[in-house]
Length: 293
Image (cartoon, rainbow, N blue to C red; front, side, top):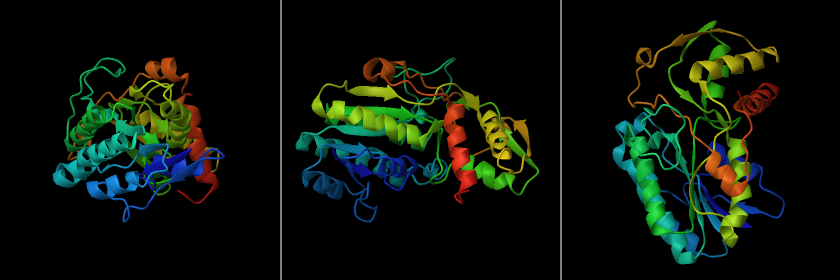
């Protein structure tokens, strides 16, 4: 398969490029050549032809910055997604679009399913939800894949931040009243590779799906797990104090509950997410054995 990828420098994008199966060509133009805020450039690239599918993993993801940078966030996340969806519809190919738990407000008691009402708390979540609507309305051959709490050995993420801070500080304070599903960017990439052939040949179900690693944790739980695993590599094991969200104010509000139910994806594509602890261990091992942290 020949796939056009936006966001090739992001966590998921890097893993899509690194883990592409034999015989696949994943083309990821840099941002200077394919800017999500340039609908004409997006349309032209898709119209070049020769693509079996497009994966939209690019996004404006600076959650706090987006609160003041509204136009840029909406240009990339909403209008960029609309342009990709319209272009792929015109080209007769499917679009797999990555989205986020931030489309929900986090007030549900239990994991969110795909049909739960959306209620984003901030600019980032609202712009991503608008991008979902654009994809749904512009190209019937779409699959929206919501995920959450993405971690990897590539790019900026919570695991890398914890390892960096833990190397210098004997004590850390980490939020314990937000709960979600830590998810490996590599596992997201592998899931996308499993979906795309069926989406392209019409045998796979279109629509909105969730993918996260199995289980749940708080940010405090995740930090403790990271340091437990890193200690086996001789890394520092700081004391991690649990705090409330109110003790760590940020410009953008975060959902208190980011848990996502993945049963629909399992029914449609047979994909069974592995436990988040296994996935995070692989990330920590790779970071501790290399120089990424």
